Length: 243
Image (cartoon, rainbow, N blue to C red; front, side, top):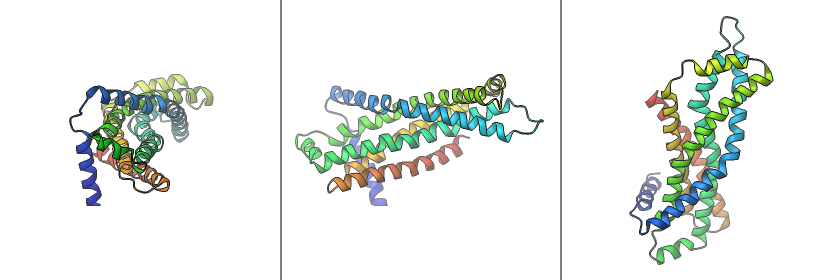
């Protein structure tokens, strides 16, 4: 474990060395941002709408007491989506979609000796391959989380219209009442941390792949599993520190 952690830290150090040509790295960062951000809009949007709707319906079901105002469903749904569902579940989904792609892409380059060719040409392979992915992850995941929060609240509103368990007016009142900006700050800190975890761990697994196609698949699987575990651990740590 300590050997792997030390190799992981050294790889990150190599990844963020001063680049030879900023123009080339900038183009790679933009390409990775499109891949991570634009490519994930559809799946994140669908998941957020359904999670927001399901959360609102479940909260309304549990608030069966006439002494509890129905508007509280909007407040609980809002805070749950901002603090936990949007950043954490979205990141777990991104670990499967983006993380496996990163690990398999770099792993394939390793087993086909493309990384060796880059190093022979004097290119800093970790910096060229890994740093743009980490920067894109830390930039685009927070933007995706912001979109997820907005869509999850919208999904809750649609659920109120369709189901009738809570009136739309009560839901909007609950969403507006008692809003604390700290919840959004916590969500953004989580999103940045999760983006770094997904990109760096999956890139590490792919970079040190050895063997053939079978090992590339195993590296992608390990990258996704380890990323999900570390996302849940970081979620606990950040929540405990900031709340």
